Image 1: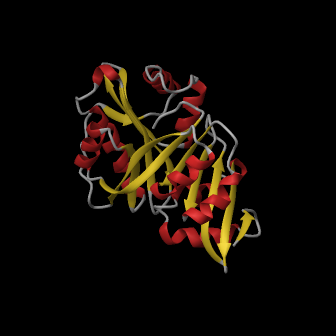
Image 2: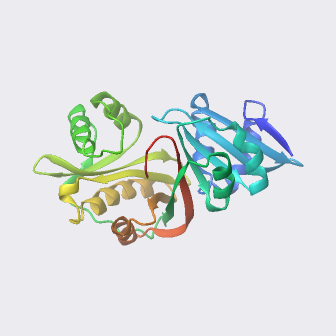
Image 3: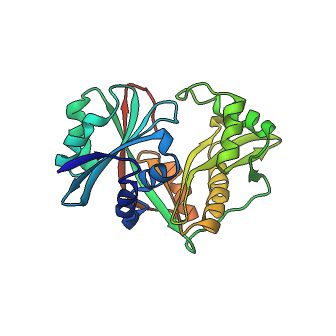
Length: 262
């Protein structure tokens, strides 16, 4: 087995391997192509066949690491991950491999859900629209300030978000009460994330409305939309199922020293 750092000379070979299952490898497929300056990756090859990879994306508050491969391959690749304070995303079969290196890490099971074009049920409301303005960014900051498990941010940061990726929100009497976004957009799949509703406004269908609007745009531009949700978050899963999302697998969110949860 040969481990190579991903760079100009081998990038296309890795992309060609990943495109056989873009949904499964969406993070790597996107980051290696579109944000290489924010991405460090190593790939393991055996007789020119890609056996696994580890990727670290550095443009988030804490580094985000993706590890893929069988247990033997992962054991060789894991030495390339950061030393502390990062989030790792792995298939369930690699938990023991990661725990052996980071025994204090916390892990959470996430359901991986997908809806294909033509299978969606969209719940439209007049209170839902795309977030675009600096005022919208202020309202998003106000909404997310109720999340104690996330670092403090700024209006500028959320305004920059809106310039780079679509975000949809539900407004009640001028207050933003729920939102959903898409942080990766490709013709094959858009990844939906960041879904959050103010605690005082839950169980009223607002998350369904925000995610519906985001999913509608996604499926105008891609063949499928996918998202991850904690396996113990039954209300969220019910909302996504109403829209047409179906579970296609499980992933693990690994917290190494950040205190963050999915």
